[in-house]
Length: 322
Image 1 (spheres, one colour):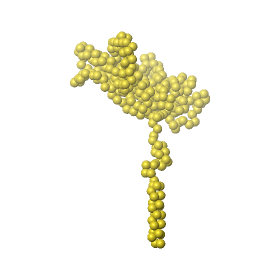
Image 2: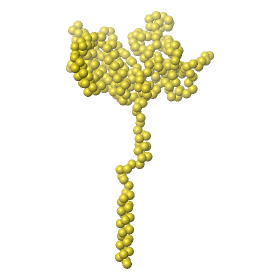
Image 3: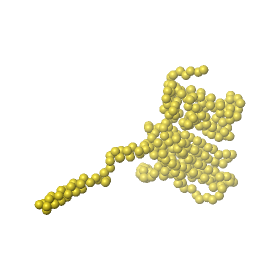
Image 4: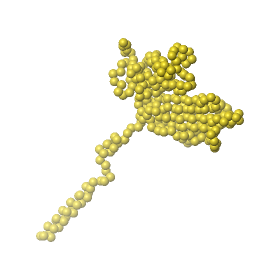
C-alpha cells in the first residue's frame, strides 16, 4: 500500500515538473509595450538638416613656399539629398563667376563633348552612375582648378610673388523649421589690390523639399512694405556706421536696393549684401536686420519664432499708427 502511494506521488511530481517546463518563459520574447516605447524614443530626423562638409580631392601639384597657390573646395554632405544637389550647383556657379579664365578650359571641354560619339556619351553616363556625388562634383570642379593654376603660372611669369587663392565652403546655419539654412562662404584673391568675399544663404523647406525665396515668405502684396522697412534699416546703418550725414548724398553713390539674400535670424529677418552693393569696400559684407515685431502682417505667420506665432494680424488688416 505504501509503495502504491509512493508511486502515485512520484507520478504527480513528474507531471507537475513537465508542465512547468512546458510553460517556461521564452527569454527571446520581448514585451510589445517595451518595443513600442523604445521605438518612440528614436528621434525623427526627417525634418532636420544633418551633415558635415567634405573636402574635394582635386589634382593639385605639390608646392612648398609662401607663394604656393591655394585652391580649396568643400562639399556639403547631409541627410537631405535635394539640399546637397542645390549647394553643389551653387558651388559651380560661384567658381564660374570667379574664374573667368576658365573659359578656355570649358571651350575645350565643349569641343571634346561635341566630337564624342553616342556610345562614348552612354559610357560616361554609366560611369557617372557608379560615382559618388562627391566624385562627380570633383570632376566638374577640376577644370576650374586647372585654369586657376594656369593663372598662377602666368602671374609668376610676369614677376608676381603673391599667393593667389580660391576657397569655397558651405555650412549649416539652421538645421530645422521654420527654414533650414545653409550659408555658402566664398573668398578669392587673384592678384590686385585686394581679395573678394561672398556670403550667400540658401533656405529650404524640409517638408516640401524645396528651396524658399524671399518672396515666398512674405504675405501677398507686402513686398513694398518690406522694402520700406529695409530702407529704414539701411538709413540707420548708414548713420550708425558714420558713412554719411546726409542719406540723399550717400545714395548718389551707393543707392539702396532690396536684397534677396536672406535668412531668419534670432532677432529678425537678416538681409545680406555683397561687396560694393550698398557701400564701399571698407564696409565688407553689410547686413540689415529687420526685427520680427516690425514684420507683423508682412512676414507669413509660420516664419515667426514660436513665441510670436500667436495672434498675428492678417496682411489685409489695417495697422494703426499713433
